[in-house]
Image (cartoon, rainbow, N blue to C red; front, side):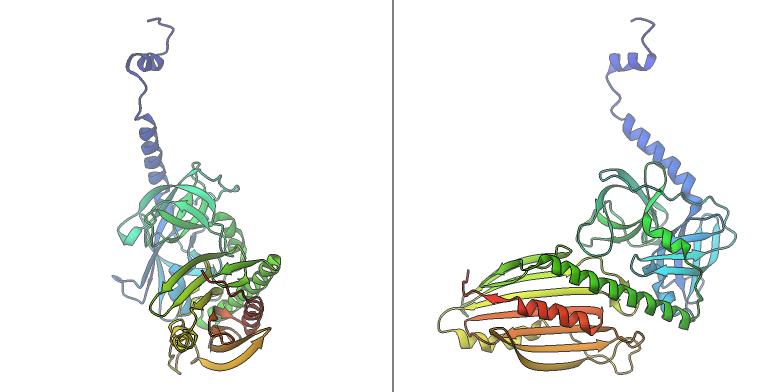
Length: 432
């Protein structure tokens, strides 16, 4: 063989390509990334003073040389709700540090903490969004068992919901919330935030672009009153933005409808995730068709649960000839089965006991029996959880049921959405 042939090429010609080389390069790259970044990665614990115990555990990463850490709001939400009872601490290979809350972002599920005395290099935040299909790695502390690196693929942004989320093919686990998602250059492109519980490899992240506003905010006062006021401010902004966006999205749909059994109903905007189904109850002589939708990635607030959340259910019941009155007898129990209203202790600091009303209303050619309930947010005046159930009572053989549930809204969006849904229902009398 000619001496002019490079040794590496000669080896390929003699023995074939090294099929394990990419895997070795990947392992070498990951090992280098792991060792280089480990000092800048933290475990966040929320505790009530017990050195050996914690109430909440998550992950975080260093973003500045003066000790600022990024994590998820839901990791520190317990502290935000009661800073007089809980404390924050951050742990890394370099030691254990008391942590202080600087700011938080409910909508994007982010929080900024401060620690003192950290000797580590901050992670670089990417200035460009990653390309769909690119390889990424994520760090975190799954179940508190130790710092872990997970490889995956960035698939672009999720197409549903009103909150931006990265769609990731990677198996994140509980405890990794708040950890960084990195591109091939080791830059932060996002923050771990959630998993799809029914999948073992679908996870979500908060885009790095959402960090800029958080990093620019002035530090918050961390007494209970101040944190409640900031929570109230963010909830009000979230509700206003969500309700206005929803109404714009519905307006874009115009007169578009979807057929559900024997009725036409307004087609929900594409930001909703929707499913349809049908059932035949032979013994009762009833065909049920349904169309259900909800918003994805709605924020959660400690003690309140999901906020700015909307779910709707549209059902058509077609009864065979002669069984209509039996259908009317069956419907009250059906309506109760969809009722999400629960009893609330009058002393609750989160919600008021629900107030319910029942009435009959004519909308166009349809008479509706409507039951609605509302529970007020005690600490956040003007916001409510709503549950509305409407059953048409005009025709014993074609019955429409509409359920609308909203969490963390004012009264106006409930009225606007329910009016649009009820006014848009058209019964065709055609049954599958």
